[in-house]
Image 1 (cartoon, helix red, strand yellow):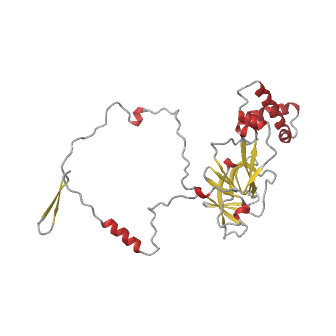
Image 2: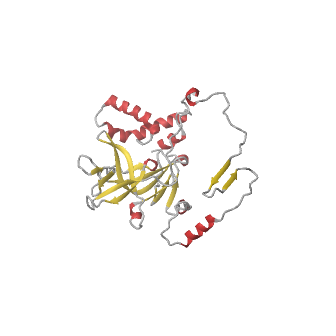
Image 3: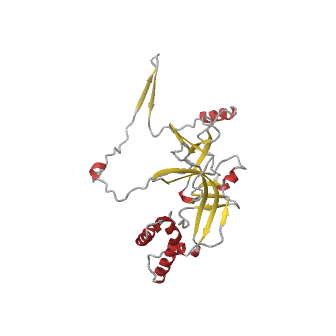
Amino acid sequence: MNNCPELRPYLDEHTKELERTSSHNLEKRQEQEFPKWLADRMKALHVKQSPEATDELYSLACGLDNRVHTYMGCIVNGVRFHTKDHDDRRITQNSGICVSGEHDGEEVDFYGVLSNVVVLNYVLGYKVILFKCTWFDTNQKKKRIKHDYNFTTIQVISTWYDNDPFILATQTQQVFYLDDYKNGHNWKVVQKVNHRHMWDVPERDTNIEIDEEVCGGSDEEAYQDNESHELNWFVEQDDGFEFQRSDRLNIDLEVVNDNVLILENMNDNDDNFICDDIEEEDETLDDYANENEMWLSSDSESESD
């Protein structure tokens, strides 16, 4: 529930109520008492038909179904994830996980691998998809993470936060782990990539007023010359013979087949020629979904925890 921003006002309100009685072991007490407190609060607001008790908050407060489904793969916003056990049987890697978090009051990146995909079912048809992860111990004080120029290297022989393995599926970023030949087999180089056909485009702020004088905006029409002009080109050779070209609309067009010959010659060459101009059709998403995987879009389902 701490990962749900909609619950932050209720968490703060519950914290103040606990502080009135005692501030001892505050986090542990809130972890034990907050679910029941929130359920009573939402049920009372739901009876009053208060708009504050939205369907999402009400279903979350009522608790989850005891039947939990697990999967070995998941597709989140077009990015494919597999569990570590599934990756061990393949030559590809889709189990690397990175998420931003807080450790000792500092913002850090947590690196790990995906262990399981857990789907929680709530009333009114809502679902929450969680990633169960194994986190590598990257404590900076223990020198288990290194930043060498533009490379980040982590130690993968020890773990931490074993009692806090779950994150929301939409919170994660996929990373890849490469062998680190400099530091040894216990170290991995973290590789962050931008996936194909995916761009992080910043949203445009519609509240910003545009200054017409700065942008050159005015009521005057832009100048455009609508009259055509004839251009004559002359090429002189050494013998004094002169060629003349006149760019007019009545010139007959002729198709030149030189490009066809070039392509044919390219096709006759060996396999060392690589043509990057021909874009292959991306069929990766067509092969993603199968009986052991599920599709997930952050815009289609409720993802509150």
